[in-house]
Image 1 (tube, protein in one colour):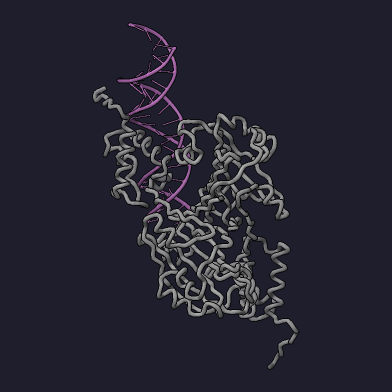
Image 2 (cartoon, helix red, strand yellow):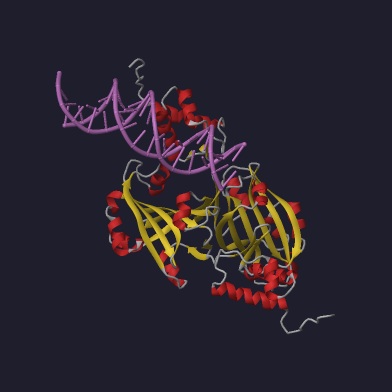
Length: 242
Length: 242
DNA sequence: GGGTATTTGTTCGTATGTATT
DNA sequence: TAATACATACGAACAAATACC
């Protein structure tokens, strides 16, 4: 060979893999960004494109990047795991993952619920509900947009209680609901509406992960219907079957 | 007025609502199809556009149609409920809803699993897996595209067994797995790739509902990792928290 | 990417029959 | 009976979102 390859103990592709992983971890290549094209990376590391490809394949295999033919190579968002069980409390879930959570109230009103919501809440279609629109953020990034219906005679003023406490659980406590549990979760997905995409700070090409949930008090009486739209780019729901 | 309003007991908009509901039920307007535009409906029923809009709003409220500004009004697919629990069996779920189910094998191969899959299956990354690609149909419409990994030494030939039986459960029985249960389900969503959209016969603008699942045998040993891509237009996952 | 046509969304105004006070 | 409020219905114009070329 004219220029012999240096035989270090680690192969070149593995060295490149490690370097790129570090670049991603350091934020040099932020989540969602596109990596330089393969020839460019090959030039940077002074290797053949095939060697770069091997490193990229390894990173893709480990879930750090996604390689898309014709488009490029992208740094994947680390998905926030959102475990769902009988006792699902947003802030607990997030803090357990050592992240910071915040939920803000976008809107509150009083209205009659759509028919399917009334059925889920087991109330009359012409009865009133307090409707809250909330946006949850994790580490400063919006994650989840939720429309919540609370039966009105019982939960009048829960908007104020939520404003004061910043938490649904605590707001419910003010109304004598010391504890509650999730009865059912229905999960689907649909294209994001422009407003969803804007609020969730997500590309319009990405869908929203829709989950309907029904929470009941300890007597089994429905207290909340929630329609959540999650940033599919960044959230993953986890259901453990115990 | 030159032509006075006829006062039947039911308002015109409600009569129109009922008629359209019937048209949808009868299949005159099939699921997914677009309704005539508002002026056209107004002409058909001999009313003002506002009156039609009121009827449409009622139908949308009840979940029969979806109204999309600039695009039109569409008959919603009745979502197939896919309840997920410890014992999730595709054909049982479907037949319980009085529908017909069929799963076909698109592809089978033997390969080393990607690292996350190997971790979920608790096997070495360089061990082999039997990989099946299946497409499930309900009432003739494709619903779910699944890539399944089975540890290879144990489940060699499961592709043949599946071909024979047409069922994963029955194929597993041939390998001594009389029963199994689902340990965890992870749900997310992403834009559909062109191949996904084609196989699922879904518009490219609609996302896929991605669910990863791990099934274990009665000893708790992982036997299958599945990566399912569901037609988000037509499937909804239901998790009951008992 | 930009302009045009299509389609739904919103807001005026007007009129009339029904129920309540 | 009269006054009032409310639901229903029609008409016109413009705004906003989308599709198409």
